[in-house]
Structure formats: C-alpha cells, structure tokens
Image 1: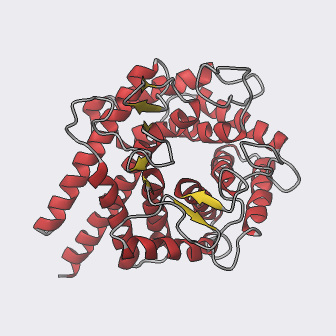
Image 2: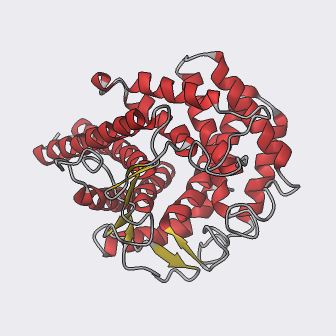
Amino acid sequence: MSQLTLQTLELYARHRRASLDWLVRSIEHGAGGSCAHFSIALGWSHPYPETTGYVIPTLLANQAELPELGLREHALACGRWLLSIQNSDGSWNGGLHPCKGAAKPSVFNTGQILKGMLALHRADAGPEFLNAASRGAEWLVSRAAADGLWGGGDYRASQTPSYYTHVLWPMLDTWLETGERSVRDSVERGVATVLARIRPNGVIAHWGFTDEPRAFTHTIAYALRGLLECSRILGAWDDVGARTVPALEKLLRRAELDGGRLAGEFDDDWRPKARYECLTGSAQTAINLLLWEHNEPDLRIVNAAAKLVDRVCATQHLTHPLAGVRGAVAGSWPIWGRYMTLRYPNWAAKYHVDALARLSARIEREAESACASS
C-alpha cells in the first residue's frame, strides 16, 4: 500500500473518529436519544427519535474499530429509549421528543427507526427489537394506499414524496427477517409507483420536501438510496437499481467538475438553485455513488465519491474549542445556507461517518488488488 494511500486512510480515520465522538456527545446530551442538532446560539436540541433510529446502525458498524467509545452500549441505550416511546399500534411519533404539541404518528420517522431496531436485532441485543420492527412495519403496511405509498398531506407535500423510498427500504429489510409477505408486496407496489415517476433526465418527480420543482440534495439522495437498497435486497439491479444511474451520472459530473462541491438544491432540469452546499446531501451522494460502483465497477465513480467526501472533510473542525462543533458537520456550507441554517445536525455526522467508512473500505480493496497483481 502506497504512502499516499496510507495517509488518506489515516486522514479519513481521524475525521470518522471525530464525528463518532460528536455523535456520542449528542446522545449524552439527549438523555435517551441523540440530539437532533447543535446550534452555536441555542446549544443542543431535544433528542430526535427519527435520526436516533438510523444513528444506531452507524454506532454498531464502528464498535469493533473503536471499542473505547462504548458505541454498542450507546446504541443499546438509544434502542431501549426508542422502545419506551413506541406507540401501542407500532408507530413512532414525528418531531423531537417530547413533542411540543399533540403527538402525531409519522410514516417517515417510523421507517427510519426500523433501521435501528433491525441493527440491534442483528447484533443479538434481544428479541424485543425485531418485535418492535415487525410491529412498525405492519403499521406502515396498514397505512399504505393501493399504490404502496401513503397518500397526500404527509409532511409539506400534497402527495407522498419520492424520498419515501427511504421508508420502503427498511420495510423490505424487515421482511428479510420476518418473512411477512404483506410487507414485501406493499413495498413492491411502492417501488413501482416511484419508478414510474422517473423522467428521461433521471429526475424523480416529487423528490423534494414540497411540491416545488426543486429539491435539496439531501432528499434527492434519500430517494436514490432507497431505490438502490431495495434493488440490493430484491436482487433487481437491472429493473430497479440501474434506473437511478442517469441521476447519479448527473451528480457525478457535477462533483467532478467542481472539486466535490454540489449545489445544495437542484430543479427538475438539473439547474443549481443555490450557491451553498448541503453537506448531508454531499455525503449521502458519495454513498450512493459507491453503491452504484459496487454494481458497475469504475474507478471514475470512486474518484467522484472521494471528491465529495474530501470536500465535507474540508469543512469539518477537528479541534474546535466548542464540543458541539468539534467533529460536527454543518447542515449547509457556508453554515448560513438555507438547509439547517446555523446548525450541525446529527444526521449530517451520521452520513459523513458512513461515507468515510464505505470509501475507506473501497480504497483498501483497490490497494490490496493492486498489490496482488504487482
């Protein structure tokens, strides 16, 4: 392995450790779950059940490399907290906890929490976690319409946004464990509905938070990731996963041309609609590129993913005096951009860790392959 490769992997390890340290602090301040974000002006927010759910797999995936951080123990604590606030019908409520107003069950939040329940089940943390995931998936099926989605009025859009593929994915993952056919059937209907929304230029209609013809790279990446993961579980690259390639090609080209910088928002014609970067979306896009490259090996794709990851690393403070900033990833860059303005969200740190881990593993495989052939 070359000296340059070793230096790159060491740099990525420092950034990954810094973000995991920050996630641990977010849990310690959350008194149960992980705080949604840190604000320089207001400090730590209340814990966020939705993102706590998908922080859990990230903690567990890194426990072996960093045992001194107690990541498994923190993941278990978060999981038990989520069990304690699950509704009797299997759902979880939206928003931060505790809710400011009347509690309302949330399709999207429930879907994301399934990821944590499944990760803990697979880590042999106890049967209660699979039971909770099964109940959550059954609730999602019971709320789904004939097209496999969840009707209008959810979040701020008049119909189910296309980024709800990020709900279909954990539902399908739950089916892998339970074998409940109604869950798989519902997911397959939902996937078909979203695939029908793909336009010739790769844009998936309704992939933003609202009905406006523009979307954050965060929700663009959500929509693509959900399809990529459903494709993996179903073994359906040609019919599902490959349908994301036109959009991924557009994002790859943007990353290549501008040194890993992506506009924080795009319209339905791929025109940038913002000058700031949505760092969460950049990290997520790097992951999506690497998922694509796993199916269609091409070092050009790996290079674009590395540029995106390097760009996010360049915005991260590893030695900041404020513990809420040190190791965090901002919502926007510059931090006053429109996405999560002046805040450091826990999901940005989570996806940064995931992108670093996936990219590091890919670089190591490439280096091993080069050594074996030399």
